[in-house]
Length: 139
Image (cartoon, rainbow, N blue to C red):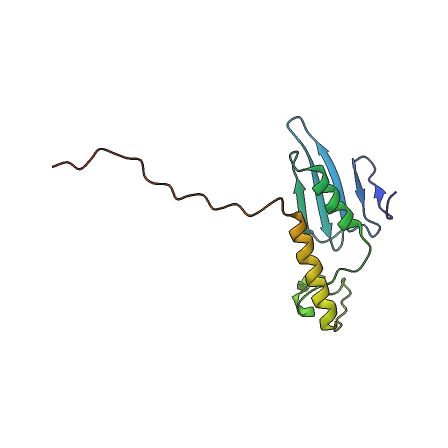
C-alpha cells in the first residue's frame, strides 16, 4: 500500500484512500493499457477518465500516477464557481490571496521547467508543398 492506496480484489489495480479514484491495468489479447477513473461518489458516474495505451512511455504513466496520489491540495484558478455544480456538495473549496511575488516566482519556475523539457532548438515549420508539375500549357 503506497500513499494509502489499496489493491482492488480481483483486479490488477489500486483505489485511492477515499475510494474516489481507481487505477487499473488491463490486459487483453490485443493490447495492454492503464485506465484511471475518478468519481465523486459510487452513485454518480465518473467525473473524468484517463486512458494510457500500450505505447505510452512508462515515465509519463509514473508521473501521472505520482501526481494523482499526491495528498497536497490542488490549487484552482478562477472563481469558486468554476467547479462543476455536481461537485459543490462534496468538494471543499478555499480561496485565498497570494502575494504577487509568490505568483511571479511560481511562473518563473514553471517557465524554467518547461524550457528544461525542451529537447533542442525549435524546428522550422515544413516548407509549403508545391503541387506536382503537370503538363505544360496547352492550346
